Image (tube, rainbow, N blue to C red; front, side):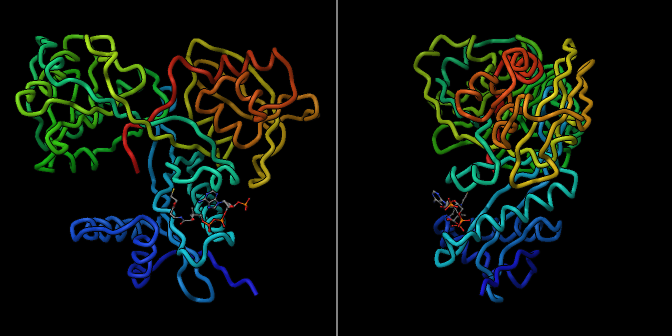
Length: 389
Ligand SMILES: CC(C)(COP(=O)(O)OP(=O)(O)OC[C@H]1O[C@@H](n2cnc3c(N)ncnc32)[C@H](O)[C@@H]1OP(=O)(O)O)[C@@H](O)C(=O)NCCC(=O)NCCS
């Protein structure tokens, strides 16, 4: 008899959840375990930690974190699935899928229309409608080349009172740049960064850089600058450490301007972690995101979603002035361009319709439909995230 049950975790589940975590991702040192207990307890309090029990014994645990993601100038609530772990003896029996379905349902009900995750294994999540959407890129640069970038903008070290202003500065930047994917960092997260003695935050009137040591090297967590002068100035501050740190590793957008400023671009090293996206609520996800304000268009398409019946069927999306309106369409789905759940996720993140067709994620319809879908969704540069969760 199957006795699997998805449920919220309680404080007295934490030891069992940690045991599953250790068997899934490897050992933690004392500081790591401390951190795990702290963040896990916080998520438990927020009702964002769930698990699966088998006949009363906890056999899986996972988090659905409450984030917001920038999608073309607007913030979309996003459930960040993390720490998805199944006890070794319980794997391969659908426990992980049950956990993910439960987390997806809760997230949708909470008003989080999209979900993102970094997969350790792609098939588990593909089965459930997540698809590769973007990447976190960590690029290694020569510190000396950054040091001599110059720049005349006045830069000062940030303090606790700057959190609010930095939130606004980065949000303004994301609105203007219309980037897709990066997380919105709320004031509480900036306050934590500003309070951490091992994280250095420097600001200018129109820019901010966050960096720290990574062994003998430096690591830039985020650098945002509105102007060339400030871009140069903030990178120079980091590069000024070049007598000790030979390399600077940086989490960057694919079109970060530093790529056009450095002489050693060809020699840079890069590490990529791909992340996946799932549209949990078609209507809310398409309405919440932004679109290029210069584009006005209407498209009717169908969605096939075996996991989420409420997403399936024909929809009409009308975009005007950067905003989308969505209604259920009264159309025969057989003649419409038809997206699988995975195709919809990839399209949402900006993948070109023609590529989705070649991958079997977009079917039916015609070239005219593809042109409109491309106009509405495909963007100048790929979706990205700066941080890992
Ligand atoms: C990955 C993990 C969560 C999957 O849990 P699970 O209970 O075994 O998954 P399910 O039984 O629900 O499997 C769902 C599907 O994914 C497939 N799958 C599961 N684990 C897989 C793996 N490691 N590689 C490839 N496919 C896998 C299954 O075959 C199944 O497909 P099927 O329905 O076609 O047979 C579990 O193996 C685990 O905890 N691994 C160690 C930690 C980890 O990697 N976590 C994921 C972090 S993102």
